[in-house]
Image (cartoon, rainbow, N blue to C red):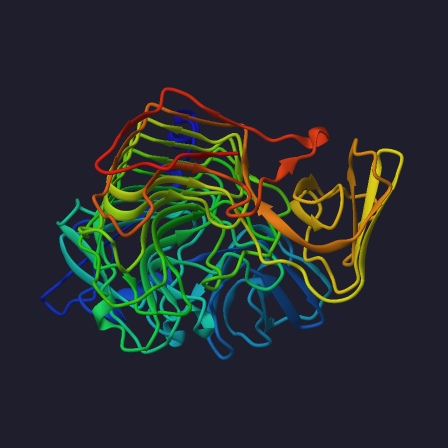
Length: 544
């Protein structure tokens, strides 16, 4: 967000105050009379009662259909509709019992009968009869101010219908009274899923739910993993997706996952892209992550991530974004997992992928397995600069490959400068992917780029200068690389373990294959400059 945008947006936000009240007064939400958020039920009810922007209302007869992305309402709720203008405004506005809900729409019966669409800036929220009501004439966007003390919440998870607790709104600003002064704590649960104190469904239904201009700052989030009684839950602080979404000056504690086979966890995640959308200028800065929970597990936890959503442990993210997110950042953050080598459970400090023109700079990452790790999604034009990694097994780990295709009859043919690969059992690649070929001939261990021409679930084409006209293909694999990358000015202090391979920087798209090459038609490269490596025992440096 530019300074001008910030100055224009902030005066538009309606302000709400919430406090841990001890006088049993509900409050009116003003600074002098804040709402009472002293229990989990009260806090979540207030957050759920804040208004949602309605993108539009259409009608046929007496039935109105409202579109409000990720509204979170349930059939039978009493919802207050406001802001419709025009000749039929009195029919659209008012309090109605809703039905026929989908993640992004709901219906209600109007007093009049006509066919048309509503106009105006429309909002919707729970009414008094549908649960706690915020008794103010508020319209989005909203700034929520949290006073000192401990607030409990059920937060959000994809694993529970409706998310479990509450979900933030676009352009919402949540600001505490300072780290360790305001504490937002997850209340716990028994579901095996990824929980977040602040999170939302990034793509409910078939539409993106973008929290554009969302901002959270100046509080501590207690992820409270010990309060989750399931066998494999993961507990994190924030997961949001939006253009110009900011996570700033947060302290996160008691984070982690109990799983040994699934549910890898993010502690703070700004999502850069999904199947439905990509965003720009989202980031994490001046945040602190310390005091993780200490369960016994073998599943990685990534502390600060700018990239895709969670995927099952051991499997790549096979959902392709429509486009890369633009210019995400992780800046001036501090991570200390407090562990001793050989580091178990696995903690990964920073991660960035599914983006272009990203930057990771000025961070400190201490006492864990991986300083920076690339999730199994691709990225371009990343700068990794002036970070300090202390007591780590791996400093910066970039590049990996997905599982091989299998089954059916496979072959490769070339006509002119275009080669066609057929994998009858399905190749699992997407247009624009980099792919590693395993063949019996001249194309073996070649990394190529999948073209849009001739693409199907079983075939793809790539440009090549190879002279061989045919080859027998045994497998293809997605390559998750980072192209056009600068790594400069970083300090890596490796751990003292003798039982593990210690690597300061790993930049190898093949990850264990035998000397793959890159087709010169689509060559990718790494640029490593001004690298300072401080060694405790040994270093194994790999460069593509």
